[in-house]
Image (tube, rainbow, N blue to C red; front, side, top):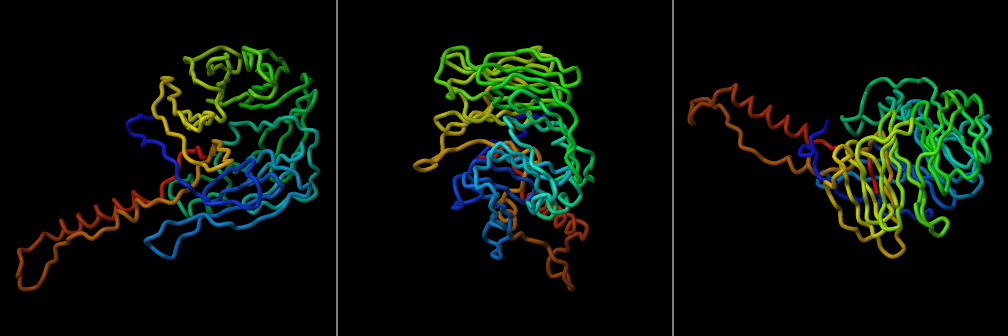
Length: 383
């Protein structure tokens, strides 16, 4: 368990100053690259580049830009580092791209008529493919260098009246089977054999092994204008979900197992959150007024509140979880590069002689201090 006193406070840091290709609708990051989907079908790829001026921070720059063939809005972008693939949901169709280049996989037909998409959360947390870890570690020493597992990744495609199960490898997308389901799915999250699905009215869980389904919790406990309350499902652990329910005066967050049993305590917010992201053991929540509340999952208490930043007129902020983490420019290394006095041993012993071992020991300590302050990886939450 992480000691909260050992974790520095969260803070906001701009990574990309402006995006002119269109309105941002989704984004993800991994290693030293950020991938952005836009309302006009544009797919943007940014990479962290070092600045030639040592006094300036590194910055993200546009590496490539391409248009989705439909020209429609990019609705969702899911990175699957363990097989070096990106899943793009656009116009209710699933397309598969390569990572990091975002090239469309040839000879693969898109899956159509999709209401919601859920990749097994456990598989998304597998170590990245070797080709990606090499790129990631080129800018940060904190990313895992373990060889990625190339096992297939399981995912569920929720259509109007069925749940279709697929297996995705580097070579192909393979259909497995279908389970009947009622219409109206809006959001879904999968963790192992359990699939949690939300309609506009209620959360339900499906046991994919037995094809059994049961209802868990209403999305809203009072009447509201349709579409104003969107369900939130967060995978907390391999057998645990967090569900949010609007009571009319506040929002309750309930932790439940894949079998539907309540666990832990209850979270509460004064309004219905816009975004909810997990960076275990912390949960970051963006409220409608722009304020970000950070709760402890283990104690259910607020550990930090970030005041609403100024996003300018028409700004629509949102929080996004990046499971594999990503690199961010840091000034800490530069700040530690300062002049220090070092004793020298000269012939003639004009000055008192300093022990050679102590000189080297002092130099080594300074070098270790600088190495420990290299560009840090941000927590897996971005804004």
